[in-house]
Image (spheres, rainbow, N blue to C red):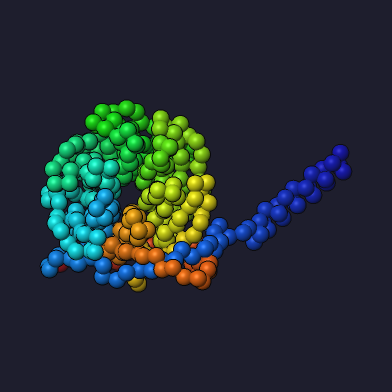
Length: 346
């Protein structure tokens, strides 16, 4: 009996030793990957005189190659041509806190507003064609949202809404806005979400959800059946699927752009946190043009960045390897204002 007890104690000590040593033996969460050959283009967009920039939320490209910018100051939604020249502003007075922007196969614009809880479908002339949700009403119902984040479309016109910040679910409608179903709840299990921030649909009808704070992309069939997930990729703030079915991701936690193949393998990346041209601070939503130009809504830098391919015979790995989430977290302020209750009235 005594020998058995000593053996158990030895095993326990050995396990404790291994646990203590584990952190030093862990490999880094991320490694260098191929550097994608992109360079930033400075001053691409020609803003009208007197126009101010603010937090940039989303960007999209239509069939003509025109670029639409969605930002949190007026004009909140504006159209630019393929050379970056201003064309017009759209939807004056419709938006409170712009979030997501998508363009469907008929060049209609779909906006998500996490301030007024609406999803709007706007035709190319600027006319509102469809309203989903009720303005300034946050709740969970088959006709209401709570801070919706993004929208995606199936080939048959079905619409998927990432009802992200408040409800942690995906809501499916037909092309006319009739509710079909919803799935998901808050959590970290399969089919659960910790902020479904972005959603896209591939040519097979599979639904990819950027489960942002769980740092993964979950993939479902058209009816919401869980198929698989991609992990160890970063924070999926914005997703785009290109015709080759590669997934491009704005990693807004580590502030880089990532390209993934159909199996979720990282093919390459570019970018790093910061405020200089080419650097990012909350890389939010992206769009990819037909010539593979990448447009980025760079929230905290108050700008829309443009990146063009820069072909080079030199093949190299990224020098930036994510290790810490930047521009995140805070503590309560302690200063004169917070101590006013202790100061006697004069």
